[in-house]
Length: 427
Image (cartoon, rainbow, N blue to C red; front, side, top):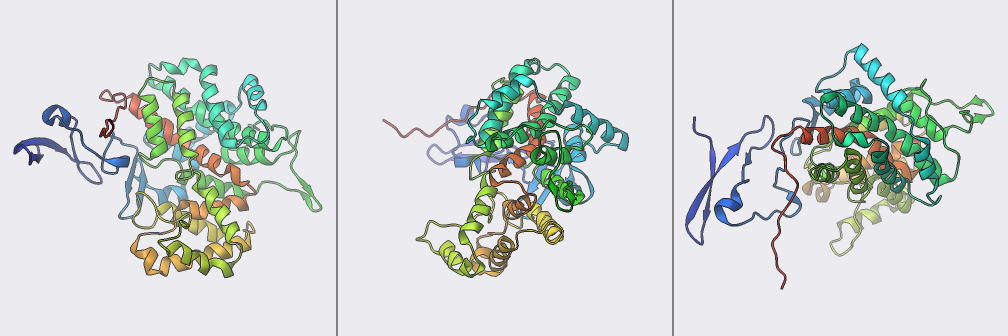
């Protein structure tokens, strides 16, 4: 049967060229223009790659018009409400959810892999206390490539899984150590008796000797509701198709670089304020607004075309409807409001902004709905996590997505080194 084709006609020469149309299982079809330059002698021009599919993938699907997100075909709502982050990790790595026995084995393996080499701890200790946790985290992950250089050449699935599970297990430890280094306080080693998410909170909060904070009413233990909240945030951040940091990971991997070097590059890309750093900016802006009585004035500034001010946490490059991750977090935030004593002042300001934006024609017409960053910052603040750690939280959740995307790229026999072209306008 003849393939569907797309015909391109050059109006300068009246020559026509045909390119195959490839159909997706979900989402838009694509025009295969891999031979475009060879046939026409021209390049295509697509700033920011907004209309370009750079790869085939079977991991994550997004429908921005419908506000839909799926990992391996399963909706994000289903995963966030009914499955843990480790189940989501297993799903991404193995293309299916685990059995109870597989999940237990996976959990125990990650617990035992969570420790990092003492020499790497020494390296972290050389950073100034003023260093941002993200700079330490990126450097620490890059350094991991020296400790596990054997992962440069992986010959089978087991070696790939070992590499992936190792980095997923160690990222929370590196992030916690980076945080404590930025505060100038002693590191807390992982506790293998604690689950993945609980262990991270423990490494952030514990005192030397592994003791938890004491109050007049007793020892302040980590609450189950806190673990569930952070675990959900990790799940919602696990992957997001070919975003800037994921594309960076794939591009660096295309050079043959060590997988952990590619992940380090992804961390650096995520740190940008237009990407993963946005949740820090949301809280900073809520604090700047200061009081609910000031909201109307800032809304007016956001709508003023002559003012550079814009509301953080609204709108998304892909979603032209409500961000499904934001919906899940909104539901979680409402549930946790009383249980975690969410900052009432920040909540009041955020609620007022949300109420206006969801009913104001200016925001509705421009599809400026609250995104995941709008809600995650308030929840992370309630979990007693400092603002500089917000993007590091994003890294912990996203590592499994990056490493799964990298493994998919490595297993694709048609993959090539990334090499975009340009429209030259110089001398």
